[in-house]
Image (cartoon, rainbow, N blue to C red):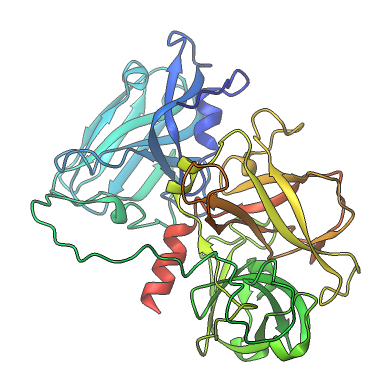
Length: 434
C-alpha cells in the first residue's frame, strides 16, 4: 500500500489537476468538516479524465472494475468558486442520473427537464461543483455534451468515449489459447549479429526524426512501424507537418552507417488536445510506410502499462534518456543519461499542475552536462520478477518535451516528460485504427 502526505493540496486543487486520463491510488478525503480537505493515496486505482477538451476546470474520476450495473458511474467535478445564485445547465449524450455529492447537496439543488437537460442552482456559495453521474442504460457511459455555467459554455469540445475501453459489461464466457511470454519488445538482443561490430546497442529503440534531411528530434520505436515523439517535433503552429517531408532513422547510436535504417513516414498522428503555445499534451505518433527490420541494433521498446508499477519501487523510479554532448549536432555524441522521476507533491520546489497530470519531472542522477533530446523516451527497466538479477524489458514511460527548443541542456533544472500513463489508450487507439 502506498501512502503519501498531501498536506498542501486541497480537494478542489487536486481535482483541478486532472486534465487527461491517468491512474493513481484511491483518493480519500480526511477532515470532512473543512473544504480544505487533505488527500492520501491508498488502495484501488482511480482514473481521472478531462471530459471537455481544452477546459481543465472540468474533470471526472472513475473507478474501473465495478459491477456491470455500476460501471458507467463516475464523479463529475468543476473547479470553482461558485457564488450564491450560480446556475449550471448540463446535458449528456445518453440517458443519465445526476446526484449531487453530499457537500454540494447542502449548497445547491438539481432538477431535470424532458429534453434531457439538468439544471443546478446554488442557494449558497461553494468552492466547487461535484456530482455522481451514472448511465441508465447498461454499459453506456453518459458523456457531457453541454456544461453551461452562468451562460458560459464549459464544454465546447466534448471528449466522447474516453472511458469506453474500461466498460466490460457481463462476461460469463471466455476462451484462451496458450501463447509464450512476449519477448519481442524492450529486450536488447546480443545474439545472431547481423550488422557487425562487438558492441551491443544500449538503446536499440532510439530513433532520430528528420525533416527534409535535417535531424530535428528524437523518438522511440514501438512495434514494427510506429515511433513515439513529441508533438512539437512534427507540427507547425500545432498543425501536423506533411508526412512526405519526414523520415525516421533507426540503428544510429555511435555506430557505422551499415546498421542504419531510414524509413519514410506514412501518417502523422498528433494528440487532439495538443496546445503548441503552452505545450499541453505534447505527444505524437508516427506511422511508418513499411515495417522496420529487427536486428541487434534495431528493436522496439515496450509501451508503458500500469502493471509495470507492481514490479517497481514507486518511491524510486529511475529511467534512462538518450542525450548528446555535442550541442546542436544531435546526430552524434550520443550517450545514455540516468535520471530519477520526481514526486511533484514533495520534491519539486514550485508546484506546477502539469507535473501531476499529463507530465512528470525527472532530474539527472549524476548531473550530466549532456543535453536531453526532445522526443527522447524516459526508458524504465521493468524486471520480469522481483528476484535478484531478474531479466526484464525496457518500457517507455515518458517523452522529453520542452515546447521551445529541441534540446534540454540545463542539468540543474528538472526535465519535463509527457507521461504515458495518460496517453497509452490514445496510442493504442491510433495504432489499431490505422
